[in-house]
Amino acid sequence: MTDIPRYPTLHLDVPPDDVDEASATLFELGATGVEERDRSTLEKSPGDAVLLVAHFETEDEARIAGGTVSWPSRLEHIVGDDWKHRWREFFKPSRLGERIVVRPPWEEVATKPRDVVITIDPGQAFGTGTHETTRLVLSELDRIVKGGERVLDVGCGSGILSIGAVLLGAARAEGIDVEAESVDATHENAERNGVKGMVLASLTPLARVKGTFPLVLANVESRVLVPFAKEIAAKVAPGGTLILSGLLFEEEAALIAAYAPMSAVNVTREKDWIAITLTKAAAPKAKAKAKTKAKAKVKTKAKAKAETKAKAKVKTKAKAKRPATKRGAKTKTKTKTKRR
Image 1 (cartoon, rainbow, N blue to C red):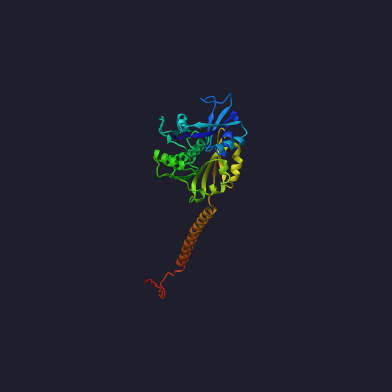
Image 2 (cartoon, rainbow, N blue to C red):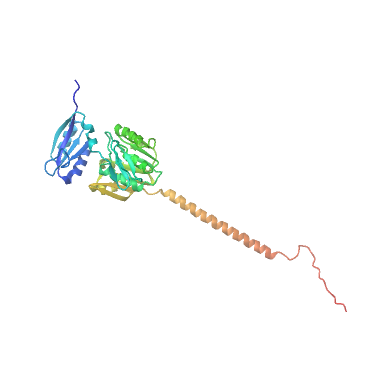
């Protein structure tokens, strides 16, 4: 007889104002997913509190997290595998800004002529377009992508950001992740959206990714973004753009400092989450070379003009000195005598 699987979960009753902080803390402690349940859901927390249900790979991880968080918690188990697909009931089409629409493949959606529709089945990977951080990055992509860019997506999850970038006009997107499920989900979703071959994903470590990119995305947690700041920034091409998210608003100053000397050009916020857009200065050598070339061109034109002027002057002088008669010719004087 096959044993029925039991999955550990940690339940926390938290005040509404603490939801984002508690969720971020649970993810930092190893949660693979966090459900938010309030008065609008079937299973709810008492009073005005919000029930957070954090899923963990092992019971030991769940117990350690329960002993670490500052909110009351209790360990429970989910029995069986039906829960893995229950989330689909709550994944509905959503609109981001004027033209981006995110939908699951099992839901139809009415669209407008200019809409960019991203069809996503995340499977066990992160990225449905419902989380604030994903929405913030997609909105920034809609603003920034001009067409033809090469994109690096650090922590690609379901591939939603890579696919969104290409559908908005980027030429190619390369995603990396530490989870094999994310790589599979990205490739499946790329094919689902008609961008197979333009969106690729792998388990390649960041340090082994070749080259630099005009546009780099990193929608991961601050506990990854800060220690890997130097490595992530190194993948941004001179004059390129970096979009960071997965951040709470109070982490803004620390993240901007970690990515100096890149310049923060835009910060967007939805609830307690933010996305930071930074740019890298263009290469100084390229500027200096262009400036020197321009100066040389001006100098050459000036020299050519001076030479032309000098030649004209010499020619004028030569013409002025030319005798009225040929060299060696004798001058004859004719005298007319009047007849008398």
